[in-house]
Length: 403
Ligand code: PMT
Image (cartoon, rainbow, N blue to C red; front, side):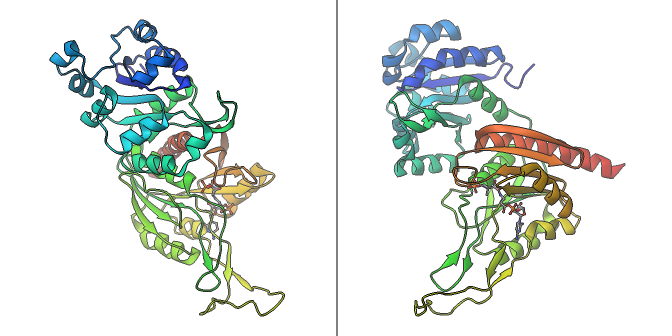
């Protein structure tokens, strides 16, 4: 038995070059015990034939909303009801835009509107199209509605460019889909997660901050919610939609984040500190915009409270810290684990093009008597893996405390 045994997956294939990988994807899903029915768009049929996908899926391939035979039995509604998951791979920019705006002018978009099953997309497109503000906005809206985005990966593209936009490999998609069907390992638990940067004001218009985008913390919030937890996000200023089903308290400064977290700690089982909290803030905040009257200026700074250490000191909560290091990751992370008296810590190497504001990351997760590396992957996939590890260790911790 696997988590995909006897699951019904409608695989939507849209018109991108990555469509050539879909026969392998179908084969891999079926190896895990899933039943797969393929729906192709007109564009997809320019890249790969229905016959190939029919042969590997063992099922009739559908493509037309106006197929008289299938629609006599309301084919699109039947498919929508049959699905435990609608997976679209590859999902082109056009498909993402049409789903965002609720189009229903072909079989695939129509069944996406008609289904109550979860929807997951594996985007695939040119890197500039992926980075385009409108594509990113569309993805944010879809995520906020509970649609899962699997990838994309970075690398060389069919068009000769290099960047984010490659479809995940079939095995990576299968791993992410398995996670979607995973047990609700955090059911009944209340989890608080800090995310994003803090801003430390200098005057009414200026502040000290850092490059955190909030992507890691928001991905963990989404994964924890999918795993059944009641999730409270405490977020610094970011440009991300709050994941479906997650509550969010928005803050600006480290002091505000500290107060928001400490106010809710009594109702928390697990605290995950992903935020890049400013360690220092200006001693004085000017009431008016500071004028450039001097050729040099010095800013006196004072330490901010350590939110994670303060939560750990309450000894009421299972604490998971993050460690952002530019060198000697394991050494510094283990030091933070012990010094802040944490249950676990997830360390990442940071620097130019690493961790901060990236779609991918890699983690080394440490606890008192062990550790595990989570290899480079999208923050979505890493968050699911980390949540799995936290659930295991939390269960062992509470079983140990009960004895
Ligand atoms: O947001 P992204 O762009 O996705 O980037 C993700 C990330 C790189 C920010 C994230 O993966 C990460 O490493 N977060 C922790 C960043 C950090 O501040 O690390 P640190 O080693 O300085 O702090 C150690 C721990 O103490 C962290 O859990 C931090 O949240 C916490 N801390 C630090 C200072 C403080 N005053 N209060 C805290 O709670």
